[in-house]
Image: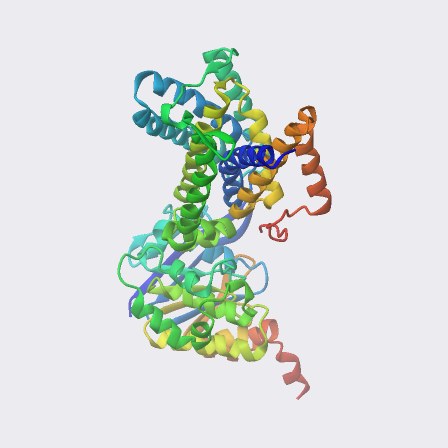
Amino acid sequence: MSATTFAQHLLTGISLGGAYALIAIGYTMVYGILRLINFAHGDIFMISGYFMIFAMASFPWFIAIPVALIGTVILGVVIEKAAYKPLRSAPRMSIMISAIGVSYLLENLATYLFTAIPKAYPEIPFLKKILTFGGITTSLVTLLTPVLTVVLVVLLMQLINHTKIGMAMRAVSKDTEASRLMGIKVDNTISMTFIIGCLLAGIGAILYFTDRMTVYPYSGSLPGLKCFVAAVLGGIGSIPGAVIGGFIIGICETFLVAFGYSTFSDAFTFLLLIIILLVRPTGLFGEAATDKV
Amino acid sequence: MSNILEVKDLKVAYGGIEAVRGISFDVPEGQIVTLIGANGAGKSSTLRSIVGLEKPKAGSIKFQDMDLVGMGTETIVTKGITLVPEGRRVFVNLSVLENLKMGAYMRKDSIEEDLNWVYDLFPRLKERSWQAAGTLSGGEQQMLAIARALMCKPKLIMMDEPSLGLAPIIVQGVFDIIREINKQGVTILLVEQNANMALNAAHLGYVMETGRITMSGPGKELAANEEIKAAYLGKAKKKSVN
């Protein structure tokens, strides 16, 4: 493999990793605050793809993007209020099963409403612009994805570490009851987490689907699971962990395909999950498992 | 003197089991009031229902003539009443300063003055303001929990077992602080298993047994009562030997 080909694959891998990272943050944040693996997150990402298709049919891209993102955020918050909030004091298993239920509901609803035939994802003209430098050919979206990911993560970390709402989110993730004693509205804080997670998944969806060019009702299930693995790899609950996990999985997957093992690239991700859980269940940046009391 | 808190016929039940079986007590403004009793007497349940963390089965809770029953915890704490929960419950992942800011979460005004006030009360916290609360010792965490509660400028501060699991010398420090805060005008409702310390610090004491209040009176009087000595202070035996 020549240096140019290597660089080409590396760039593709980093780009895919960036999109994964944006989705993985949603898993890790929701887990951090609710101790819930939101299995519906990948499907919210898929529905976001459809939202964009419909938004682009009626609006120019610069209006369609915010419309699709707002739609995704509303969907996420509604799911939380309808399927998770009533189960807040139920055993943790119940809320997880509810999440699996929402996941199937969204997939089947999408099949029913939009059919299982893949729909063409609209082209956002400037994102598809082809750039060439030093023998590497790439589209703008490939370059933009990792850059945007890093910018968004930096902004998110600022929000979490240096604002009042971020402080409240960290407090609620550690001790819900003590947070209520401080006067924090726990439900609003949880909604905020879903808003951020879905917003990032929506941005990830635009970047990912612009590259893939089609959306179908199961578009979200495999990427969703991979991003879940990324979150576990990085240490679920840790945002930098989820980002690094996303990049690792995106890069590894791309290189496996490049070396001709495309059949195994998905298997690799899940093999990785098994290995992490066996060797280092807390992931790269995860804190030692202390159960909430 | 007017009562800042009036509890009447309060009942709290957990799935059919009554932890608090109809108790009534008053907390006069500006005083230290203590609720003592053995483990499982219903002391914590009483505090938790006052602040809305448990829903009472029956009874009324009046704070400055406001009925608190049915209000959410988030609303109750804005009225000037707060709880230092059992086991401290500081946010271990937040710094000391952030914990104090959390205490002032619902305030819109400047907190600078109160920050200086609690740092004066607890100089140790000032030294450690950037440290994660989880790295503090048990005694320091208890101080932080009290300081955090003070940051919302409460009129009534309730403390659930502030001496639990602390070394005797630290316990002394906690009680000194309780007296100091009270002197500065904050009413205190203290739940304790350390009956001796609590009764000696309190103006008014109530004894709770299996969900009922069985005795009440000025703290010092209760501390001298033979029955209480036998049950909670472990001193009666010694006397009979003398």
